[in-house]
Amino acid sequence: MKARKKVFIALSGGVDSSVAAALLIEQGFDVIGCHMKCYNVDGCAEQDAEDARRVAEQLAIPFYTFDLEHAYKDRVVSYMVKSYESGSTPNPDVMCNKEIKFGLFLKRARELGADYVATGHYVHIKKKAGAYALYAACDINKDQSYFLWTLTQKELAHCLFPLGNLTKTTVRAIARTYNLITAQKKDSQGICFLGKVSATEFLKQYIPVKSGAVITHDGTKIGTHEGAALYTVGQRHGLKIGGHKEPLYVTHKNIDENTITVAEGEHNPDLYRTEAMLDTINIISGINTHKPIAVCARIRYRQPLFKATLHMQNKTHGKLMFDNPQKAVAQGQSAVLYTKKGEMIGGGVIV
Image 1 (tube, rainbow, N blue to C red):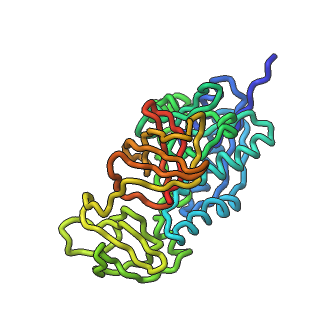
Image 2 (cartoon, rainbow, N blue to C red):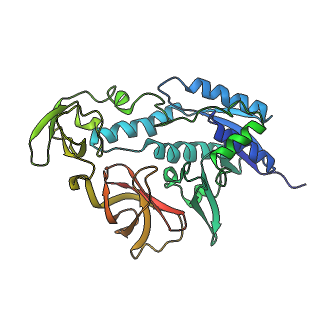
Image 3 (cartoon, rainbow, N blue to C red):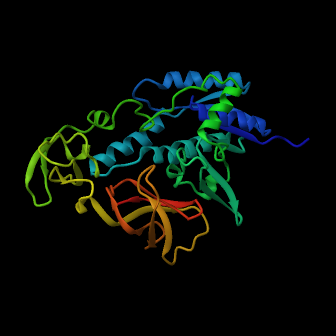
């Protein structure tokens, strides 16, 4: 009798990973439920861990907890704080996927005999010309391919994403069919480890508040702020400066001088750029990078795709030229690249 493939499913305590586990069992895999204990600020982690354990009990599968809190602080939280201190606006969820879920968790699962790890991400994985390719999920509103651009062939060979063909409505319906305790649980919002705590609130614990000037593009001072590192390009809330017909948007930060530059109105040309330099570029599979690559791109999660051309300068560095100017291009954010057919071909960090 052929041995069943062993899958370690990352149970977050939410409905998506719960249904992913149920589907894998249906598909005949030997499924082991795993909950990753990571760093958490707002105290919801204990309930999530208990919900994950109860789901595993409902599905009658083994359940283990992986204590990754120290690694999470070191590889995700520290990365976020240091990036803000240097003037960048990082994406900690991308780093969490790279370093924790498809880094440490995958490594430990494989050491314990797993053939695959699985998560509740809404994304497709397909075999294409002998390599693995990632595609946006069928449910455009839930697609999470944006956060997975750092994955390589090495990781993808051992990854399963059972929800790629499903809508959120269908996932909820499946959860109700199984009578899972997470069936009606609300989705988490915002940065994964912050929960209901705002990024600014969190950062103030590590980055001292330091009053500085808010200036316009001609150098005129129009107000003060709490520290340039605490703001991000494109931000309009929290400036607390009145007397303008249209909202003010942050267009530039100068960490050395502790100033932020603003422009009035979302259509102000000072808020737009026509290109972005990218670093730590990862191309997932089989694309000729020795010539310009026509892509569809997005520079923030849920942003509509726009046409652009990637010009690689070396294996990890290049320039992304936009067909049309794009608003609020923030240093440190991820630029993620797709084909017209929805294949997510890779991405890079805006510098």
